[in-house]
Image 1 (cartoon, one colour):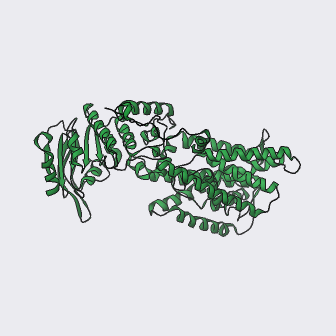
Image 2 (cartoon, rainbow over the protein chains, first blue to last red; image 1 turned 60 degrees about the vertical axis):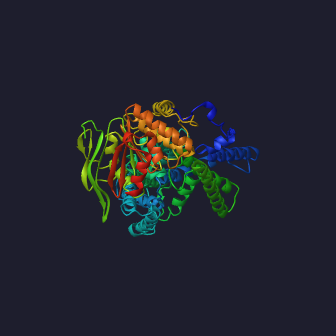
Image 3 (tube, chains in turn yellow, green; image 1 turned 135 degrees about the vertical axis):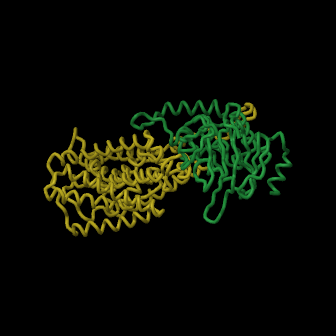
Length: 339
Length: 245
């Protein structure tokens, strides 16, 4: 007894064979990859044709790009895992600042940065777990809970530290490990690449990742099959908080100081990078490589506009358009998938 | 009731606050038997399913598996006992591939928890081809969201078959299916019975039930009103019991 009773009973497939372009577009992160590669080709061609006026390929510019990407990258990776699990964390920008301030002031009072940095990450993880506990215990939307977190921790920074800049002066080994240069490549960039590989393995090659996708994609199904969705979400909240702290460490090691206002708006940029990278706002869809491409795309566009000496507001308008277009595109893909 | 009964419900009652959903319900499922659990809306069929699959706990009474008294406190308890529930809206994740869905929550991994992807893919391929023949599924990498209702149902059944379930609980499995898909599903239930897998078919479609069931348990107002072998009844008698009790 088979589903296909006889071969003749099976109607011929009525869907046409898809073109290569369409196949790429429906791949996870396929569309963003296409946009990213196209943009790179245009930029590199422009830089080769106008080497003096458009210095995209100059070593200075590439270094700036490599230094800029890791901070947003860490934030977006953490926020992205949580988004795939079906929750949001708007507090990561504030947590990023808070943990950096904590680390810098601990170092200032004589602690080794190699001890202060893990403490900062621990604080980030604890705040993530707190967000998760409140969200899950009371069945609230994480959007609201972490909006509270955003304001609360932003205020806590000012309470703890005041509105003054904190100097960060760690041992040289710490600085060279997180902000130095290795084989001509910025250390922070190497870190973010390692994180991307690690998160890729976790989300796409490890059973935990499968549980995260299941939890975000269909919580009822995940529960029915025996996955502890609350536990999965708690871990995802912890990852988001921890990665916000890591971003704080990378940024602070690079600049050598912390501004109490520096994290404002970063949480939205991180979520923007995730949406551009193909993550669904409803959870369950997305890829780590998409998140990373989203971050790189935001920074490439920022960089190009700076090189073209465009005023800053163009940047906001550009990113805004990109987010909406990306979200609309993702939605189309989802609807096709759900049909 | 003989000791060989796979699953037995003994005098089970279940209340949700003031509402009594089940009253003193007892029935059993034998080895290689297809039982039709019938009844009109609100008869308590879904509560019974949730109870057997471990989502609800009985207020009084107990279950036994192979004659051993057991208590299911969560979904995985019933899975350990070999019971797989296939829900009305199948418990699958649309954004994941067929392979990932089949192994969801029961992934094959190495010692570090990393997935054995090639192994799982091969098994999924084999299960889809051998155990559940479904037209239109050519690759286990397809996203479940791209499948039809019947194909999804088949993936859920493939999952149950692979994990060597002894009892399938099918909760209104045909409500979302086309005619052809329904025929194929019912055929699948019979095929599994021949392989020693029992099924409980929960439905209010008497014709579908009559096609495949060996025995019928008819529920009304939270309790059993009729328990009869197929040989001893007719479809009109069953209809009478469902409608009039």
